[in-house]
Amino acid sequence: EKQFFIGDGLLPRSLVEGALKEIDGNEMQLQVAQLMFGLLMSGKGHAKNDVFFVENCVHFWGIDGKWREWLRSLDEPEVVSGETQGVK
Image (cartoon, rainbow, N blue to C red; front, side, top):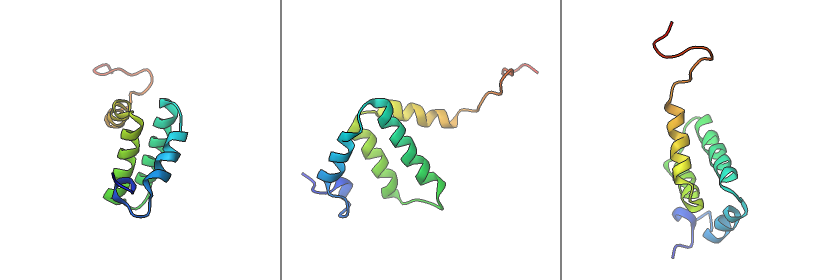
């Protein structure tokens, strides 16, 4: 069994998993994952390990489906109120 979360020698697995267990409920877990993702994307680039960290948190919580659904929603164009596709 790995001693460190995703192989990062700076993050002891027991510490990270203990903290993740304290975040209760799928909605709160999804919000935390979204916040971490937003912080990664707001900077001047991010390391692959940073993305893996968020993905591993999502997997640890078991919210993979909700996470993927949210990520897909980021690619969907927003509909302006009162407008529909094909109608001008």
